[in-house]
Image 1 (cartoon, rainbow, N blue to C red):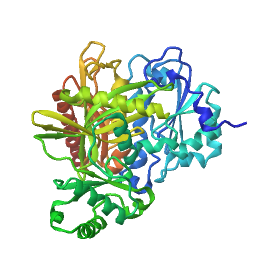
Image 2 (tube, one colour):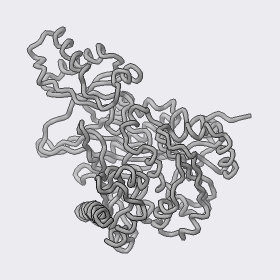
Image 3 (spheres, rainbow, N blue to C red):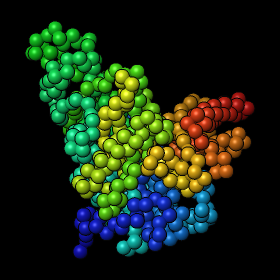
Image 4 (spheres, one colour):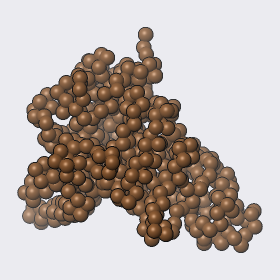
Length: 499
């Protein structure tokens, strides 16, 4: 008799959640890096299916000689791209790790979730299942939706991730409920609304409770990476001069014309709902830190990293990259809040990656932290942390929030998914590796500095690249980032001129 998803998850072992070399290994991991997200939002991501490369750093598990891995993508990954990751991992010969890694693909580059493509190919699933040892295998995903749940039940293999029935806790509304439960400070805001009329009522009520607000942010309940957020300017509407009925009419009109990044946002509003939240202003300094953790089978919460998020895009809220670690002035409070949210999520039955985004403001000589959302999945800060752990044998110091190399040296990085320049178009992964090697910009474990790359599949077609740039200080990591970006763009330009 086939087991249910819940019964399969009960088979997960506590050490299967550990990406470090685990004692008593001997398991198989099936990596399915599917971006199973709302299609309207994913359509905004350039080269979306190439983002399946980002989870290659999860192959850190191959450090354990008893671990085998299967990595599935929409299109077959070039060996050069895979070897570029395996060669960075200390403690295991590349050839030994490669023998324990199998690559499969669906031969389908369409803009649909990888998991959906897999479920359409029973013969491929049969070949994959034949490679997995019964009772000693699990699935690792970027995000868990009903698609991934169906994949787990089809293969009869447990999935290391949160049951999609708990997805509410990773939504905008669920996040606010968690913050209230854990005593984590967060901005004033509303409950969910599912049409413009109710959303205008919620916005009016928020302003009437906080008439000092100059603007607010409207958030689709399931938006990702800032896509699905839009700022609403309240000051220009002169709400204080209007009657309550006039306020609601003005707000309804303004919300209808909102420059929401997501296409057809009113339709998405009806499907998933949206809420309105106070826009945090004031202070001499403003930043967007986050904290990332993982919940192991059995409920143990492990903090993995803190970051300063780099935001941009047309709305100023779209994730562009990050710096590690977060500022020392508020890093430890950030970690305490992250631990509290992680333990609350674990009590609900959540598993694996989660992250909490904050706004930090320096007001009257002190930092004020306000939580704004929980991501109950892997995200933009996941793979840089994986990369750092993959290329070193260091650890996060819980007393300082710093990542320490075995020598005790603290390491920093700056990472991005969005190094984009027209000069990079047409550049092949082999060309990139040649440029980096000639300029001595690759990560050097002896010097504890240099760059590692991802999204190589986006390079030639879109002129887009991801990279994590490591240094022994924040300034050195920034220097490595700037030098790498400049050299790549300059040399790509020279190659164009020479042909």
